[in-house]
Amino acid sequence: MQTDCSPADDAADRQYDQPNDRYVFHHDTESSALVTTTIVHALASVTDIDVSQGEFSLYDSVDPDALNRLFRSTADGSERSGGHVAFTAVEHTVYVYANGDVVIHPPTETDPGVEQPRPHPNSQQR
Image (tube, rainbow, N blue to C red):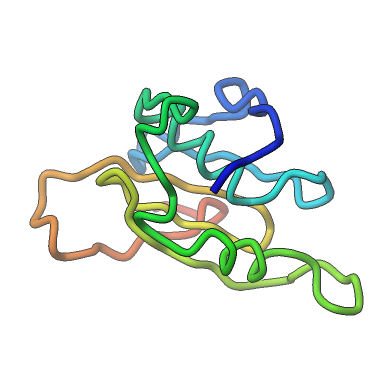
């Protein structure tokens, strides 16, 4: 997958949520950029991978075209109101939400074959 968009200021948009050990990015659903562009640059920011050098391909983890279709506006032009997709890329668990939130969890020390449930970034932690 090639992207024609320059990377957004992902480092500036990145928020590290230390209590939950996750990075939170936001994709502007009203921009012309694809959600997969935001995801690739977010992963690059978190993992220090240079995407321009071909060190990483989102195709290794998920179908980017399908992901873009899932999160684009509906046929009548309205925005998606709910739902999310989770996948693993570069040993990080990635959650993409319909509201544009992209949450990346770094690898954990637990059994890598067992995915732990993760709360949405807007949920309250007690």
